[in-house]
Amino acid sequence: MLLLRDAHNRTIRDLRISLTDRCNFRCFYCLPNGEPPLARKDTILTFEEIVRVSEIFVSLGIEKIRLTGGEPLIRRDVEKLVEKLAELKSSQSKVRSSQLKDLALTTNGYTFPKRAKALKCAGLDRITISLDSLKPENFKRITGVDALENVLHAIEAAKKAGLTPVKINAVIVRGWNEDEVVDFACFAREMDVSMRFIEFMPLDSGHEWKREMIVSGREIFKQIDRIFPLKLTEKSRGAETAWKYSFADGAPGEIGIIAPVTEMFCGACSRIRLTADGQIRTCLFSTEEYNLRDVMRSGATRAEIIEFIRTVVMKKETRHQINDVSFVQPARTMSFIGG
Ligand code: SAM
Ligand code: SF4
Image (cartoon, rainbow, N blue to C red; front, top):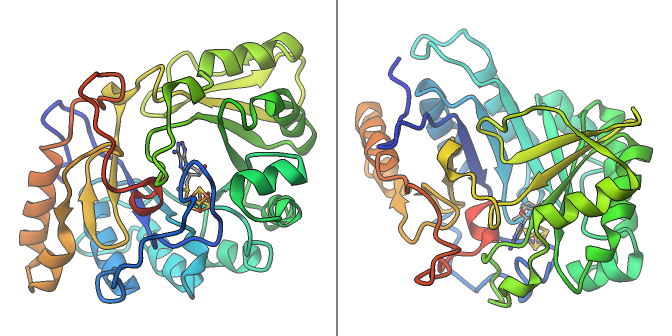
């Protein structure tokens, strides 16, 4: 099998699929005013199309698939999609010599508690739940929804369903939640979860992003390390985006720091993205997209689809340009691209 390689010799192993651009939250750093009123019904990929294209990606060496959005659990019957995708973990296929190793989902957790068990039974391996504040009022201020309790229940439900280690994402933004970093570290220790701190990226639909709002990965590390000394778990990140730390005193839990703005990790990027409407994006910050949906719907053969994917991957950007003066925020926002 010929793996998917880009022009910079990076192997692509990780596919992120946005299931929808819609969301039931209004996080100020993502989708503060809701999604634009597009006529989207026919443009959004069906589950059959997602399964078809995922199978092809896996045959090209994709090992990890993450379902995201928007809020992926807004789409009905995601469990059925997970079940189909989980079949790609078996090596029984005649056309594939490779197989999927990891099927994950990122969610805001709102409807997750009642679906945790079904998703696990359908074959989901891992879950990431977003949680930007541990204070009810601040949670509501950030997400637009009074739902801290629901998200805390979601974390419990994930643990109970055996979707462990549970990962928690918090986007840390100056003036919003940088005073909660140490509280989150306490939470990681008490709940035995992997707490991941993410720098604010210029992908918000409200275009409010400003450099001064970034709380750097370095600053987050220092805040935690002063109270709970941290130990780097692996010297190199490999293709991972996070620097991972354990607590030096042996407490449970893990800290992950994701600093795409202040510590670019593009050189090791192994990711590719598929938007809810079937566009391939080779980078979160791409200004170009490639219409895989129309290629599929035009009746292309498997070989033609593979050729299209390979050509697109060769165009993957060397790096993002957030720190260049010429940087232009992409027209599509995080909720559409899939975080
Ligand atoms: N709705 C789901 C959720 O919130 O987990 C999945 C989609 S959301 C776009 C995926 C991740 O992207 C979330 O953890 C969210 O916090 C993060 N995110 C969204 N906008 C961001 C931004 N402007 N900068 C950094 N991370 C962002
Ligand atoms: Fe919705 Fe997730 Fe974006 Fe928040 S971060 S608005 S929950 S898609």
